[in-house]
Image (tube, rainbow, N blue to C red):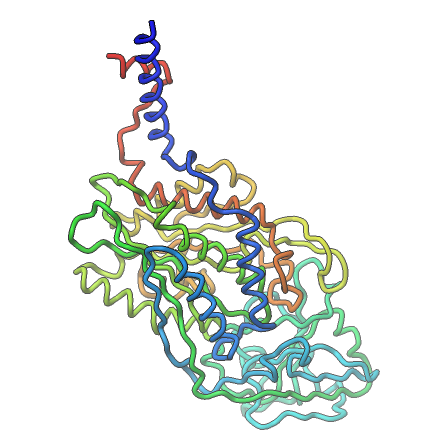
Length: 493
């Protein structure tokens, strides 16, 4: 009887192992990402400096912090990609535009009350110190809640035929969606700073609430800052160890990256994505990388990229990452279009609403995460992108969090850090907030309270599971199928 019980114990054990194989092996792994680990990384990033502008001391400190975090993980080759920000000399506000410095922008209302403001790049080359200018000489515009490339783009429709502007300054009123009546902070919105030339007149942005002070009388405006040229900066890359069981030949790279720059502390805007990618990189070799793969699935080596120059149209990706990937593709004798590019964008799992002035207090209403991909193709890189999105779409934990948009990503409709990859013709997957709301681009985005940490931890685990399953080619494997009894019966036979 003891022998019979032992036999059935072995049979049940084998059957459970088969079930584990059928479920993709991820569900039985130990919990590897926690709300606490994500909160620590977000907080550490936000506390580096009150701003995270490219080409500043804070930029250098951020890349060094990232190097230290990545160097502590096993099996990662960590290196810097150093370069100089392209374009004309760059305007950097006093104290890098920190809130304590007044953002390097002094705007005084007719009542004499100071109005928080932020300069739109680039300001005029000459020093700006306007005194007692009638409001009739100020062009007051309302932000349509989209990215504006430069100061010149703002006032271009109002130029005279001779190219001059009949105003002394331009004030843009921005209004974060749905809560503009409770914000006094300015919200920067210019992205393509590298092609911005010095403006004819100063252009600054103010909040809707602050703009209510702009009635009757005269205003004064002074800008404080410096022109930086050249402005050195650097990316941080972490290359995972080659997968086991792939033979002596080189494996195919897959790039996963996120920008590291923001106008302020950018805890929710940038910190959430940085924390997600750091957790992936730190746990990749020990917990996430597949231990086996389908014989029909290529070997993939992740390259984790933390890139600078985001405000300069993601120059760190265009000038350094894309050429680096092109060299890898040439060494492998494959086109660049075979290398998948996964971009982890802004505002992941951020709260959409907050209590109190300037969005202080508790958050509510988590913004969805939009996951979009380029159109499916037969190439291995494109198939991998499609498979990652398919695996994410199957995860029921994400039903209320993720908007899956397969085949919708193109260079004609996309914005932000994914664009250089799309222009290079790479298969791409873009992860970004479904609505850039809440504290996005605001000084109050100063700590991890901007983020729904529970949702971010769930998504991080689900995304890692999707990568794991896609890279091992689990979907191509034969599914044992059947019930537990059928599996037991097959083992007994």
